[in-house]
Length: 439
Image 1 (cartoon, rainbow, N blue to C red):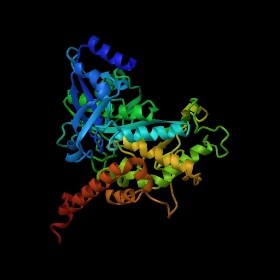
Image 2 (tube, rainbow, N blue to C red):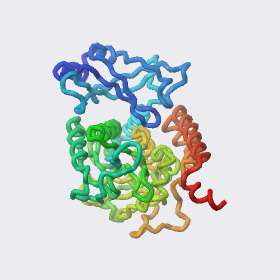
Image 3 (cartoon, rainbow, N blue to C red):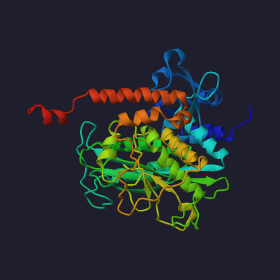
Image 4 (cartoon, rainbow, N blue to C red):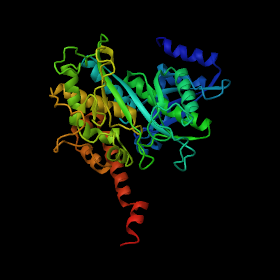
């Protein structure tokens, strides 16, 4: 077998850093992190032959009769976990899931994104993303008692969680994940840490790591962190705004055109990409906003997008064109504002890319931007207003079926219809308070 420098680096680092366990990380279809530990002496075989596990226990993977799966670790993702002890250390690697015959497993979300990234590369592009993930800190996981009453960008004693954010950022940086910003968000005890843009597959790995680190540091400080999209009624929901762009294979930003006659600095390709996002957002919304609770944010927040519009300054539009450095090619990008942090990042990035590429391939023309105050036409198309609406649009989508594959598409339709039906049959406290005494 040809020597692999990355495999050699991992094995040497394990010895030098006193690593006794290596965690194999992957996600189920819903985006929940899954893991099992491997001892270092098994790694050489794992690199070449994979490690077997029972896929029937993983949400959305396989039935019992076809449950045998292999996890192949990606050596480029090796990192020692800094929140574990330095002696008898623990490391992690993300894995690609394959079937016993060595083929990529069609239910592996990481493979879905890798496949879409390869399709973009075949068209001559690299898909770069920079997500902004918001979350809340609460006193414990059993309620919504906040840690502070700070607001947007506050730097006062109101921002009780500054130390938690600092420790989180330092931990991410120690794992090779660059952070651009961290700050208090609008809601009480709501926070945001923004990751520096990267290629989509590496960024999806980083997002999963980020969510794990936020929760681990919170536990270390004796509090609870949640990425629930709308945990408090009347307070802002948590978003995962995704900045995105296509670079050509020579490293030039294909979205940038300083001669854009409309003054946005956008190329014709970028405008067709945006048109694709606007056209297909109702169909991919189930993936970017996958829970019943997701639609409490989309429908109930002033700054959450509802209409399928785009603009530069209007932050209520579905797509925004950031204008921080309007004449710098590398800074040209579009921001999709509907996703929330409960989404599986592998699938979310894949469907965004699929929509944008479809817009390019179909030569879609971009509609005029929303006006400055965000007012849209009375007949403007809307995002789905509930999980029930989203799942039916998704179910009928040819693009989503082709992008995700029959396995994941079919599973999500079945699982999310069941979730919506269960929600519809439940009786809330709001209903009892409103109707019980008067009807």
